[in-house]
Image 1 (cartoon, rainbow, N blue to C red):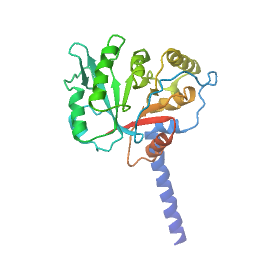
Image 2 (cartoon, helix red, strand yellow; image 1 turned 90 degrees about the vertical axis):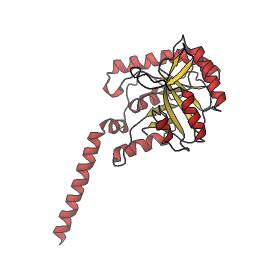
Image 3 (cartoon, rainbow, N blue to C red; image 1 turned 180 degrees about the vertical axis):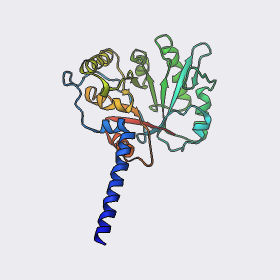
Image 4 (cartoon, one colour; image 1 turned 90 degrees about the horizontal axis):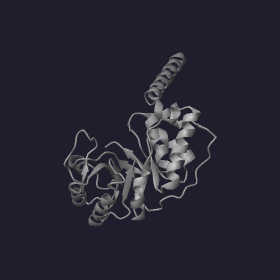
Length: 265
């Protein structure tokens, strides 16, 4: 009987280890981020002036890519925040909501916000601005200032863009802004490449005030190390059955450097 129990527990432990190993391999990106890393010590943390604008958020768990009325309809009214992908059309003076420029939509942001109002939602908005430029930033600002007033979104909007030069006017008008850093994976870069990336981002932040930095979850340790004065906005996956995913996501949500995390709907 003792041998039988010993074998049973041994087999059970072996199964658990195999399952955990598979989980780690399947989510190796998250597993790697959870391990301690130093990156390069040839650069120290930055000390730049930020755009100090407030952002109201009930909690850090937001919903990613809410670009249709059907998607918004399914979201709980108490959700802390949602992200939309937006393009400003200067010809018709309108802000359209869609992700892929090869699949253009005629859905205006007002259509989603009217539904937002009818659902009595009181969360915040993260606008991933796909085409914000120095040419359209002022007209975009006027439009979004009107949207903010009409839908009572004071201190409830993130304006995100990949060029921080375009965000200055929004900061001056009281918007919370985020610089969407270039795509890179710090775990796959040489020390020379890491130094170059730190310098590139630092050079932009030295002359452009933003409220936060946004990037992929695997960029978050890099941003936290070299730019600790900036809140971090990021996005992740979720899984009800993955221990790795759940541990990683709980770590993100409890990190004081993280302002908001986008999850799939």
